Length: 233
Image 1 (cartoon, rainbow, N blue to C red):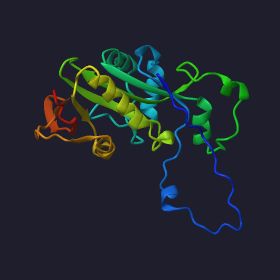
Image 2: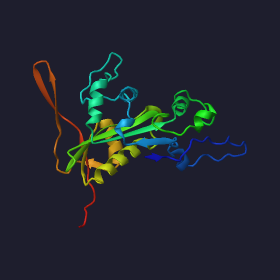
Image 3: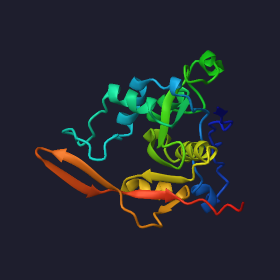
Image 4: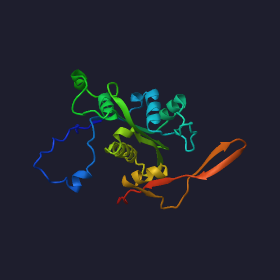
Protein backbone atom coordinates (compact mmCIF):
# COMPACT_ATOMS: atom_id res chain seq x y z
CA UNK A 1 0.00 0.00 0.00
CA UNK A 2 1.34 3.42 -0.97
CA UNK A 3 0.64 6.87 0.38
CA UNK A 4 1.49 9.65 -2.05
CA UNK A 5 3.35 12.54 -0.45
CA UNK A 6 2.29 15.25 -2.89
CA UNK A 7 0.01 17.83 -1.30
CA UNK A 8 -2.31 20.47 -2.66
CA UNK A 9 -0.88 23.95 -2.79
CA UNK A 10 -1.98 27.29 -4.14
CA UNK A 11 0.19 29.71 -6.05
CA UNK A 12 1.02 33.04 -4.36
CA UNK A 13 -0.70 36.12 -5.81
CA UNK A 14 1.15 37.71 -8.70
CA UNK A 15 2.96 40.96 -7.96
CA UNK A 16 1.93 44.08 -9.87
CA UNK A 17 5.42 44.76 -11.18
CA UNK A 18 5.81 41.23 -12.56
CA UNK A 19 4.97 41.49 -16.26
CA UNK A 20 6.39 38.11 -17.24
CA UNK A 21 3.91 35.58 -18.60
CA UNK A 22 4.04 32.01 -17.28
CA UNK A 23 6.36 29.82 -19.27
CA UNK A 24 4.97 27.14 -21.55
CA UNK A 25 6.29 24.55 -19.11
CA UNK A 26 4.26 25.99 -16.25
CA UNK A 27 1.14 26.46 -18.36
CA UNK A 28 1.20 22.78 -19.37
CA UNK A 29 2.14 21.45 -15.94
CA UNK A 30 -0.20 18.76 -14.62
CA UNK A 31 -2.28 19.73 -11.57
CA UNK A 32 -0.84 18.24 -8.36
CA UNK A 33 -1.96 14.83 -7.18
CA UNK A 34 -3.78 15.05 -3.83
CA UNK A 35 -2.88 12.75 -0.93
CA UNK A 36 -4.04 9.28 -1.94
CA UNK A 37 -4.11 5.78 -0.51
CA UNK A 38 -3.75 2.87 -2.96
CA UNK A 39 -5.17 -0.51 -1.99
CA UNK A 40 -4.91 -3.85 -3.78
CA UNK A 41 -7.20 -5.66 -1.34
CA UNK A 42 -10.70 -6.73 -2.37
CA UNK A 43 -11.80 -6.38 1.26
CA UNK A 44 -11.28 -2.60 1.03
CA UNK A 45 -13.92 -2.26 -1.70
CA UNK A 46 -17.48 -1.37 -0.78
CA UNK A 47 -19.62 -2.52 -3.75
CA UNK A 48 -22.12 0.32 -3.26
CA UNK A 49 -19.34 2.92 -3.26
CA UNK A 50 -17.83 1.27 -6.33
CA UNK A 51 -21.22 1.36 -8.08
CA UNK A 52 -21.39 5.09 -7.30
CA UNK A 53 -17.90 5.56 -8.75
CA UNK A 54 -19.00 3.88 -11.99
CA UNK A 55 -21.95 6.29 -12.14
CA UNK A 56 -19.78 9.34 -11.38
CA UNK A 57 -17.47 8.38 -14.24
CA UNK A 58 -20.39 7.42 -16.50
CA UNK A 59 -18.62 4.11 -16.96
CA UNK A 60 -20.31 0.78 -17.63
CA UNK A 61 -19.08 -2.78 -17.16
CA UNK A 62 -20.89 -3.71 -20.37
CA UNK A 63 -19.39 -3.17 -23.80
CA UNK A 64 -22.84 -2.13 -25.09
CA UNK A 65 -24.58 -0.49 -22.12
CA UNK A 66 -28.17 0.59 -21.90
CA UNK A 67 -28.52 4.38 -21.92
CA UNK A 68 -30.89 6.39 -19.75
CA UNK A 69 -33.04 9.23 -21.07
CA UNK A 70 -30.34 11.79 -20.16
CA UNK A 71 -27.71 9.91 -22.17
CA UNK A 72 -25.89 8.46 -19.16
CA UNK A 73 -25.20 4.75 -18.88
CA UNK A 74 -27.46 2.58 -16.78
CA UNK A 75 -26.06 2.01 -13.24
CA UNK A 76 -24.31 -1.33 -12.81
CA UNK A 77 -26.06 -4.00 -10.74
CA UNK A 78 -24.42 -4.09 -7.30
CA UNK A 79 -24.77 -7.86 -6.90
CA UNK A 80 -23.17 -8.55 -10.28
CA UNK A 81 -20.46 -6.01 -9.50
CA UNK A 82 -19.71 -7.76 -6.22
CA UNK A 83 -19.32 -11.09 -8.04
CA UNK A 84 -17.14 -9.53 -10.76
CA UNK A 85 -14.78 -7.93 -8.23
CA UNK A 86 -14.50 -11.09 -6.14
CA UNK A 87 -13.49 -13.06 -9.24
CA UNK A 88 -10.98 -10.50 -10.50
CA UNK A 89 -7.33 -11.47 -10.38
CA UNK A 90 -6.11 -7.97 -9.53
CA UNK A 91 -8.00 -4.99 -8.12
CA UNK A 92 -6.59 -1.54 -7.44
CA UNK A 93 -8.58 1.08 -5.53
CA UNK A 94 -7.59 4.68 -4.86
CA UNK A 95 -8.89 6.72 -1.94
CA UNK A 96 -8.48 10.37 -1.00
CA UNK A 97 -9.89 12.61 1.69
CA UNK A 98 -13.59 13.47 1.17
CA UNK A 99 -12.91 17.17 1.74
CA UNK A 100 -10.54 17.18 -1.25
CA UNK A 101 -13.32 15.94 -3.54
CA UNK A 102 -15.79 18.43 -2.06
CA UNK A 103 -13.37 21.34 -2.51
CA UNK A 104 -12.74 20.44 -6.15
CA UNK A 105 -16.40 19.87 -7.01
CA UNK A 106 -17.45 23.14 -5.38
CA UNK A 107 -14.40 25.08 -6.64
CA UNK A 108 -13.33 26.00 -3.13
CA UNK A 109 -9.92 27.10 -1.92
CA UNK A 110 -8.05 23.82 -1.59
CA UNK A 111 -5.71 25.28 0.99
CA UNK A 112 -8.46 25.95 3.50
CA UNK A 113 -11.70 24.50 4.74
CA UNK A 114 -12.45 21.20 6.41
CA UNK A 115 -12.19 20.33 10.07
CA UNK A 116 -8.64 20.31 11.34
CA UNK A 117 -9.18 17.11 13.30
CA UNK A 118 -10.33 15.31 10.13
CA UNK A 119 -7.09 16.29 8.44
CA UNK A 120 -5.22 14.69 11.33
CA UNK A 121 -6.92 11.31 10.80
CA UNK A 122 -4.69 8.93 8.80
CA UNK A 123 -5.89 8.38 5.26
CA UNK A 124 -7.19 4.81 4.90
CA UNK A 125 -9.96 3.11 2.90
CA UNK A 126 -12.21 3.59 5.94
CA UNK A 127 -11.55 7.32 6.33
CA UNK A 128 -11.15 8.11 2.62
CA UNK A 129 -13.45 8.32 -0.38
CA UNK A 130 -13.13 5.97 -3.34
CA UNK A 131 -12.03 8.06 -6.33
CA UNK A 132 -10.30 5.59 -8.64
CA UNK A 133 -10.42 1.94 -9.60
CA UNK A 134 -9.11 -0.66 -12.02
CA UNK A 135 -9.07 -4.44 -12.26
CA UNK A 136 -7.66 -7.30 -14.30
CA UNK A 137 -8.86 -10.81 -15.09
CA UNK A 138 -6.23 -13.48 -15.69
CA UNK A 139 -5.74 -17.22 -16.17
CA UNK A 140 -2.92 -16.84 -13.59
CA UNK A 141 -0.41 -18.37 -15.96
CA UNK A 142 -0.20 -16.79 -19.38
CA UNK A 143 -2.54 -13.93 -20.14
CA UNK A 144 -4.54 -11.15 -18.52
CA UNK A 145 -6.98 -8.44 -19.58
CA UNK A 146 -7.46 -5.06 -17.90
CA UNK A 147 -10.91 -3.57 -17.40
CA UNK A 148 -12.66 -0.60 -15.83
CA UNK A 149 -9.76 1.81 -15.22
CA UNK A 150 -11.45 5.02 -14.10
CA UNK A 151 -11.00 8.16 -11.99
CA UNK A 152 -13.72 10.61 -10.95
CA UNK A 153 -13.84 13.57 -13.36
CA UNK A 154 -12.69 16.19 -10.82
CA UNK A 155 -9.40 14.30 -10.29
CA UNK A 156 -8.68 13.27 -13.87
CA UNK A 157 -5.48 14.54 -15.44
CA UNK A 158 -3.51 14.27 -12.19
CA UNK A 159 -1.72 10.99 -12.85
CA UNK A 160 -4.03 8.79 -10.77
CA UNK A 161 -5.17 6.67 -13.71
CA UNK A 162 -1.56 6.03 -14.69
CA UNK A 163 -0.76 4.98 -11.11
CA UNK A 164 -3.66 2.50 -11.19
CA UNK A 165 -2.51 1.02 -14.48
CA UNK A 166 1.11 0.81 -13.37
CA UNK A 167 0.13 -1.00 -10.18
CA UNK A 168 -1.99 -3.53 -12.11
CA UNK A 169 0.84 -4.20 -14.57
CA UNK A 170 3.38 -4.59 -11.77
CA UNK A 171 1.22 -7.13 -9.95
CA UNK A 172 0.71 -9.12 -13.14
CA UNK A 173 4.32 -9.10 -14.30
CA UNK A 174 5.49 -10.08 -10.81
CA UNK A 175 3.53 -13.29 -11.43
CA UNK A 176 5.29 -13.82 -14.77
CA UNK A 177 2.31 -12.66 -16.84
CA UNK A 178 3.42 -10.46 -19.75
CA UNK A 179 0.65 -11.01 -22.32
CA UNK A 180 -1.53 -8.17 -21.03
CA UNK A 181 -4.41 -6.74 -23.04
CA UNK A 182 -6.73 -3.83 -22.39
CA UNK A 183 -10.23 -3.49 -23.79
CA UNK A 184 -10.98 0.19 -24.26
CA UNK A 185 -13.12 2.65 -26.14
CA UNK A 186 -11.86 5.08 -28.76
CA UNK A 187 -11.84 7.82 -26.11
CA UNK A 188 -9.59 5.73 -23.85
CA UNK A 189 -7.05 4.65 -26.46
CA UNK A 190 -4.76 7.69 -26.11
CA UNK A 191 -4.53 7.12 -22.36
CA UNK A 192 -3.54 3.47 -22.73
CA UNK A 193 -1.06 4.24 -25.51
CA UNK A 194 0.57 6.89 -23.30
CA UNK A 195 0.96 4.18 -20.63
CA UNK A 196 2.86 1.78 -22.90
CA UNK A 197 0.11 -0.09 -24.74
CA UNK A 198 -0.03 -0.41 -28.50
CA UNK A 199 -1.98 -1.99 -31.33
CA UNK A 200 -2.00 -5.78 -31.33
CA UNK A 201 1.06 -6.80 -33.36
CA UNK A 202 -0.69 -10.07 -34.25
CA UNK A 203 -3.52 -8.09 -35.89
CA UNK A 204 -6.08 -10.09 -33.93
CA UNK A 205 -9.58 -8.68 -33.44
CA UNK A 206 -11.64 -8.98 -30.30
CA UNK A 207 -15.12 -10.12 -31.22
CA UNK A 208 -17.95 -9.16 -28.86
CA UNK A 209 -21.60 -10.08 -29.07
CA UNK A 210 -24.85 -9.00 -27.53
CA UNK A 211 -28.23 -10.69 -27.76
CA UNK A 212 -31.13 -8.44 -28.82
CA UNK A 213 -34.46 -10.21 -29.14
CA UNK A 214 -33.98 -13.40 -31.13
CA UNK A 215 -30.87 -12.15 -32.88
CA UNK A 216 -27.24 -12.38 -31.93
CA UNK A 217 -25.19 -9.40 -33.09
CA UNK A 218 -21.42 -9.69 -33.41
CA UNK A 219 -19.23 -6.63 -33.37
CA UNK A 220 -15.50 -5.98 -33.36
CA UNK A 221 -14.10 -4.60 -30.13
CA UNK A 222 -11.05 -2.50 -29.36
CA UNK A 223 -7.99 -4.25 -28.01
CA UNK A 224 -4.56 -2.91 -27.10
CA UNK A 225 -1.67 -5.08 -25.98
CA UNK A 226 1.21 -4.26 -23.71
CA UNK A 227 4.36 -5.53 -25.42
CA UNK A 228 7.24 -5.83 -22.93
CA UNK A 229 10.89 -5.64 -24.01
CA UNK A 230 12.54 -8.92 -24.90
CA UNK A 231 13.95 -10.70 -21.89
CA UNK A 232 17.41 -12.20 -22.18
CA UNK A 233 17.72 -15.45 -20.24
